[in-house]
Image 1 (cartoon, rainbow, N blue to C red):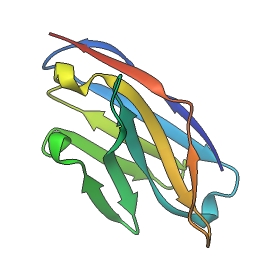
Image 2: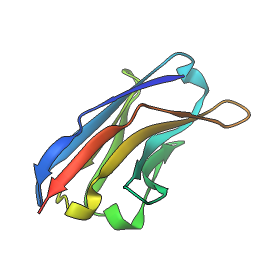
Image 3: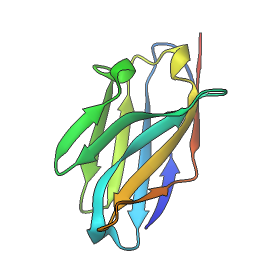
Image 4: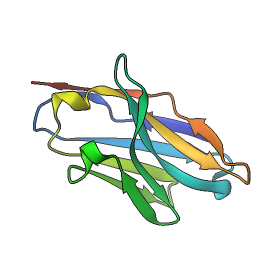
Length: 115
């Protein structure tokens, strides 16, 4: 599975951004697809993920971020509203695929929220 993420950028606090991640290759084997983020000096944390139609969000983004999936385009979106400076991070698209639940990662896209 190959992943191509886009949509990051610089935004002021309170603003919105939408990230996109297009999956290609053996997309029929995907078990879960979603987003993680990594801020400088911190570990990579879950932002949001979809698996078998169910969604799960990190506590810090609940109520502000929405993940959605366009199956026809094999593309997952992350709508980010009410952005805060602490949302600043590199955002990575992630897929868990196949019988062995192999993780695949996109190239990362920078999101910077200014105060």
